[in-house]
Length: 161
Image (tube, rainbow, N blue to C red; front, side, top):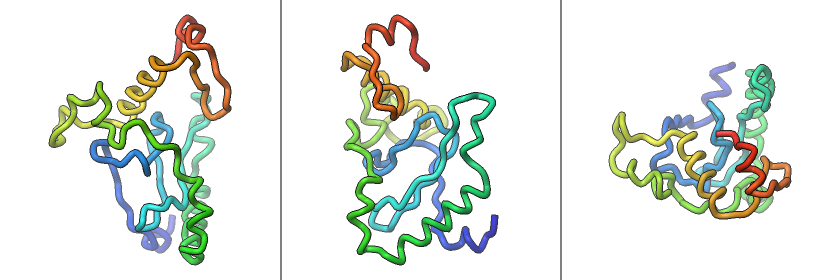
């Protein structure tokens, strides 16, 4: 990929979830890599990064070419900003139960300064939130398909962990 394109962005790498505002940064917790394109005011221009659900096809949805296209498209949006700000509101998800991962009850032990032994990985936050959701409702939502499975059926037949 061209470094000229990369230089158009302020790149920030987050390697753990402690202190990350979950009102802005909502994504698939099982990903190994994800990108957010943001305005300085926190408006989300877009996201990049996903996987196909099949193990031998996991990387079919991401490529250098598609990432380059996403970067180019993200650069187009500031030209029309702030006039388009209202149209970008749908890119922000629903209000999360916790603003920060370390506020979740089973992640409280990770509060405080980050050390090698107490960082919070993305998958840890996702597992914590999924457990809380499963225990508090009678149905389990399947992905973003809008399908629900009765909780007792979900638990009886095993859920993915």
